Length: 467
Image (cartoon, rainbow, N blue to C red; front, top):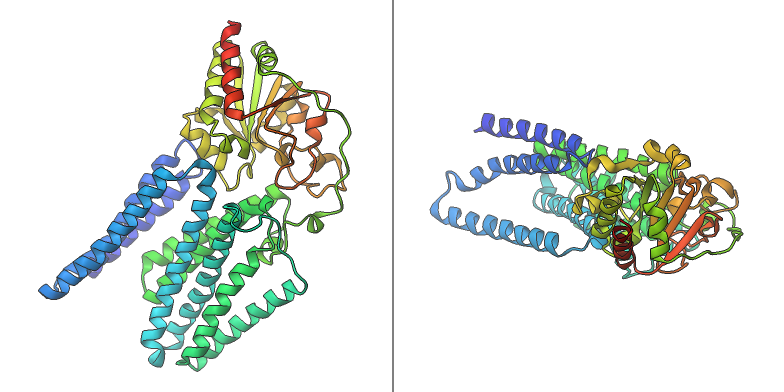
């Protein structure tokens, strides 16, 4: 049985690693998901066989009920959420799932301590307390991110005097309690204080972060959830949890670094909180110069139909309007007229890493039309039309040109360098950063106001009529 168990875990770990590798490209992401699912099924096989094998009839029935109810509940929640969640709410769901992973690790560690605290060795105590700290921070931190994204609380940074000092004090208290309980185990009140401090710390770490930086928070909490799983693996002496948790934790940190670069943040900035406020990113914004020029969908369609090349820049507004199918239809109509259409994906377009890739994949946009910032940014200078759909801060030239801007230094898509720029927006309202976008006032920019889905549908019909 032991050999079979370890063999299952070894194959499952290999499937997880291969699955994560395949998730790196939209073209292979679905296959990566399937392989990871297969790995998870293989990983839970040994515990299921243990729960059902060699048991008395009474224990077998009890185990069947417990395991069956748990699997049925989880399956139902997963299926309903997957079918019901809107693309605009996908970041919130990811935040919730990250939080649930942290909560699961927290609960496992709590039960381990409650049952074995009197006889707990140092080797067993260290991973228990780490799982409490990391799992608690991951749970409440993810819930805070969810609450901000769902607009249950303000998406603006919540700052107060002495905030960083309080966070540091809580970290020191948590570490001190962990060390004390490792050396002198058995104190339930102090253990509960450690749990409470961990939960409070997670909430306080995330609330200073503004909505513009949520992609960084989502990837960071994903890393925390992986680390919590890994520590739980040490608690339970389960190799597959250690491997899987380490993979998720490492990949989450790598993704966090990528997001930090895309948002012009340092990793230390993310780890210690307090970012997301304009004050933390530079001076006051300077008013952009220029005037707004508006175009009708029919006027825009005429210019697009006569172009040779067009780059679509999708943003969160595309997800809000559920316009991914409409933009694909427009691209197909333009392609029929010989227009080369590509999509420029900024790493933090949307509210979580990969948001735009998932959105466009849902509409069956060809993978070979999707390009990351580094691969396409230099091509805007030779592009006839840039079509910005619901994007804002990621195309704001102030990040390049205005040292006083809060987003100065943030890598952006060079949409303003195209010969003609069409921006589809409901209004002139600013993006997450809360600042005016210089692109909207540029001499080569035309604004097309209205709902993105309705506007794109009119554009596609007008291009078709041009034939």
